[in-house]
Amino acid sequence: MLQYIIWDVDSEIFHIGSFSVRWYGLLFAMGFLIGVQVMTHIFKVEKKPVSDTDSLLIYMVTSTILGARIGHFLFYEPSVLFKNPLEVLIPPYSGLASHGALVGILLGMWLYSRRKSSRATGQTFLWVTDRIAIPVCIGGFCIRMGNLMNSEIVGRPTDVPWAFVFMRNAEYAKIPRHPAQLYESLSCLVLFFLLYWFWNRYKSQTPRGSLLGFWLVWIFGLRFFYEYLKENQVSFENSLALNMGQILSIPAVLLGIFLVYRSYQNLAALPPLIEDDDVKAVR
Image 1 (cartoon, one colour):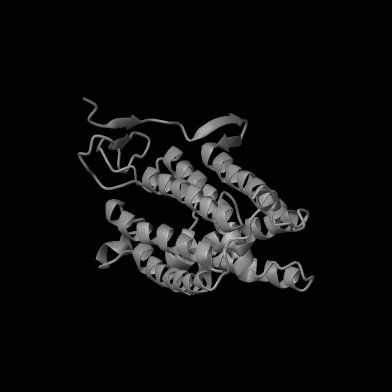
Image 2: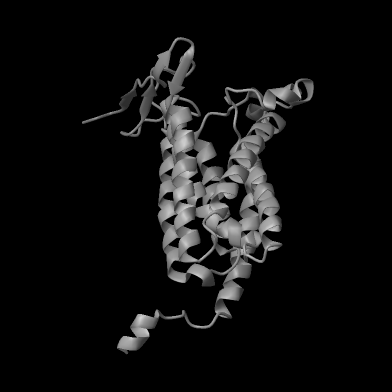
């Protein structure tokens, strides 16, 4: 019977001289590439200008990276942020915080929606954030898989049969641990299918704030509990009752509950789903 899994994967795919291509970078880029295809499909179905997905992608990439970088230094290494602010922009981006990315994405989508709303496209803030929550799940799946390929953000020691031994992580090698990255990655993938199913059912009638709210509750609610299975990222967290990831997840979950509650009230007030004209003709 398998007692644990030996994880001895090289984080580098190949290199040419000093230039290297790594799994994390490839998966990070794939998240955006797949995400823009999902958003293009949504725009086509809801009859929004497909050309807008180009500017939406720019807003997403910029706000995600800046938010994640600033969030990492602000929450985990504030001294670095204040001593050398330019390090936020300097690759490689070895420090990214999901809570910072959340703030960055919300701000980016607010700026995007202000520009599009002025052109009467109907792309309000909640319309955009509800739909962007769907491909963001793919991004989360890819990023956590990238963490797995890097043998980073590892879990605590365990004796479960699916435990991983991260051979390339010198600090935590040779001890079976929870594959916390895999837990979060698969959670994002499941959420993608759930949100897409809900949107596909209601499409333009999707209650405003419902998908974003459920996304917040699912992602950061699970994140709160997954943190109990993970090693703390920085030493100062060892003296806290809750680590930084858990502390930052609480307001995100509360905001999500509020949005779901409000959207549920709006859903109750909606008329019956509009049927397809062909279906009506048959009846």
